[in-house]
Image: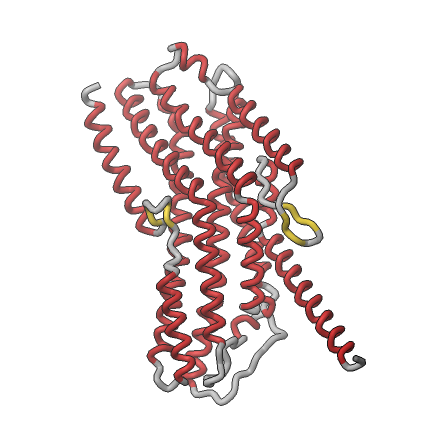
Length: 416
């Protein structure tokens, strides 16, 4: 009994240390995206709450607060909306068309805020806890700058987004001349900001997966390089900032080495996380495409209208600027998802090199073959309701469709 007691105490202390390490990783992840979470809460979007350094579902009080905040934005937004004059027939058709994207943006905000707050709490918690577990398996803590770099990317993205929206809003306020006053358009800008933030949040989450997939690639590349160089020993450097690049997770080739299998399990986690993100952000991505397409069509239509009637086109300046911003958001999404696909392709090439290396032990090559099957099972593609794939080709398809509608609208305008 006396010998068992120290063993029990040691196991308890070890489990406590593991729990503390998991909590620390979770806290680091929360700090990485904290600027996004703070701004989302100002719009009534609560993904989770933190209790004792752990993420738990939100309370009924927070749900009620979310409804109140959403109702406030909707009330202020609608109070400045030009619906009465449009219904009464005192507004021109082209001016009514300019209000259509605003209606879509409002509905998009209401639905996305309710979906995220009331129906995807557990999914948001699951994705972050899964990433925290993934970081522990990949030994991300060997690089002290990993989370700092991720935090800087988040802060830079949010600041750039705020600067762009503030500049465009000030320009619009300067040229706006409505019966409600120059500052009546501010509620619209806030809703635009929230929608752009949701798209940026999706891109930041995809970048988090891409960075972790790149870590897997670095481990595979390190193993292949050391194997090719025929080095007799592997030195593990832990005390330096660049430790993650020098750290060799796989180690020496051996029939007892199962590290490739462990890396395959981490890729499986990335694949599941990617599928979960796809499910969570399907609506936001789809509505981004819809609203941007409406902006493009309405911008083309109103431009032709002002040109044919010889009216002052200054009202088009704001519409064109917001249209450009929405197109840039689509390009941002496409490029971010494309980087994830390129990292997956690199993973596939590196694993194939291990499979084709017949000097390696058979057990390691078998692990690599199982890894390849996982890569084929998880393509890491983001699909919009199984209709469109979000990658670099999406921009080309979007430009092609917009050009087609430009030709159609120009032809129709000659008969009106």
